[in-house]
Length: 444
Image 1 (tube, rainbow, N blue to C red):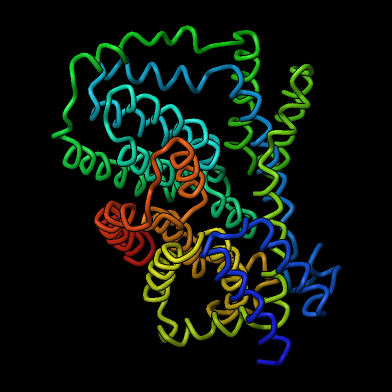
Image 2 (tube, rainbow, N blue to C red):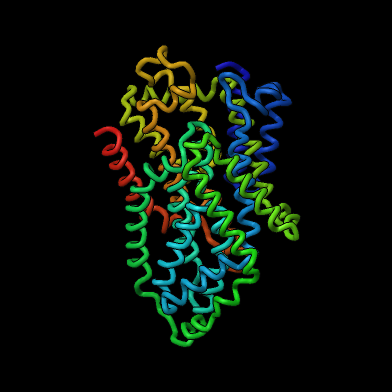
């Protein structure tokens, strides 16, 4: 590699190390790393912001999809809908901890698939802590299981998991594609996950007095703005319908999410300022800085060199390479947040596609090449590996860190090792299931 390539790699690794240490907000680090790449001439400003013929710059489709969904969720949150769902789940479970956890896990998985898992844990985790404190039980194991349910549910759809958004933006995979490919294996994994919940929590001790106190919660009082709730539900229904058919109408998911956000802002003028203030701007700027750094790595040839090394390690065998991507993605997520890793892998897979395509000269563009049937299994392996790797360790995914922050502020800190004791025995069987699924789906 050239000296510029080594400089790009050094900056990227240094930022990674600082992100893993979690002492400085990762949005600051990513932005600093991206700006440093431009100032030192590793990548020029135009390529970093807009891309070039062979380099992806900032992925504005991902940015605007996140912005649109954040606005929709911020407005809906103030109707009390999510608190209503939580309390109703407790009532249906008759105040029994294991049934509450199963119900809350199902609610979390569904909401994570429809909204996004970062937003979902922000909404659900505080409620879980309140419920289990009222039951006089340690909330930490329950919060950990909710985190895992959010990663499983989010991995099922295009909009539920930031890495999936990035993969869809790079490949053009639709909302229905994710349901069709990831849906079956995630459903199987969620069933396994529920079995683990039953096995781990079957001996939970609960006082009858605590159970009665929780059952007295009134879910009807959770809804604070019924007219706004109906407007939100109508707009969300339109947005999800748009996601389902966007491949047929020629609109990107970002366009549909922004259209829904604009419509809901028009229907809720009195709360528009608050909805915009509550956008997770650190997450947005983290993505922007990250995309610039990955553009620099691609521009200098670092990504291509790493990709070719992976191809050489598997002798170009498609199944071996897909399994390598799956397990490397999962293990890497245990060591660092899966978002920067997926951003790097997305660029990597684009770079090595010509080496894997059976007849690259017959393809008119890179966009057509990277979705060829010989390349597609690698994208799905990346999606599944990043999703399951998020459950392996505390720093594996953004929802983990967000939920851990909420729990810590509530007086229930989650240590790295405690999360690992739950994550390893759950995630390893899930990765084995994903490995078998990839083999059966694409190579058998």
